[in-house]
Image (tube, rainbow, N blue to C red; front, side, top):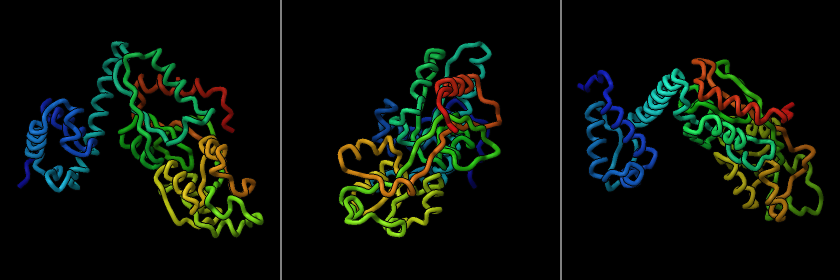
Length: 307
């Protein structure tokens, strides 16, 4: 019979922190530098944690490192636990009016080249107000950001809006323009005649693999999805192959277009506009640290027209 876990001790928390680092590093050897302890010690800590929890968290050995199904669930639960502990510390510091702790931000990829995106300015302003706060950024897909906010793994998400949740607040920030591109090897790069809308719809198309404005628009246009990627770097690679068409933000595609490596395909028809927003949970109320960052985001984007 498996052990029933009682109250968590400080030792349990330390062991869980070791487990998180090992899981994120993808193995014991890779975690040695981050933890600054030897592999044998890390192995002993993992064994102690598994004994404490009464379950095997990961397979490790010559066959490589891999989380078990139970290990994956413990990893996700531990992420939520550690952020909740940090939020508690933040609240206590709020009471003392000392701004110290962590703010975890999740962002959709390829926004830094967008001149309308002022997240860097917001971070600068935030650090002037709270220099002792640690800022942590994760660049992940939209669905991961939304779920991570709901699960309390992230404090603030920055995403292209495409659907709304009653559990989240949305703060409009900036926008970006998307066009359909082809690479220089693609038949539509230098066509003898302009491709028709039917030609474009029948050509192989590469889209994002998760629910997003990209997926919504490609389905509405009836594009022939034959390849997927989980970020826009992957889409750009597939476009560059010359085998696929794909949507990219105009600011991100600009260097490729300038070098004559890509060009838009029928931009009057195959394009769409994306609105970006900061998302955060309605309940519980954001901590003072998160509220200050949201305020910095709003102020830094106040001159941007998001209509």
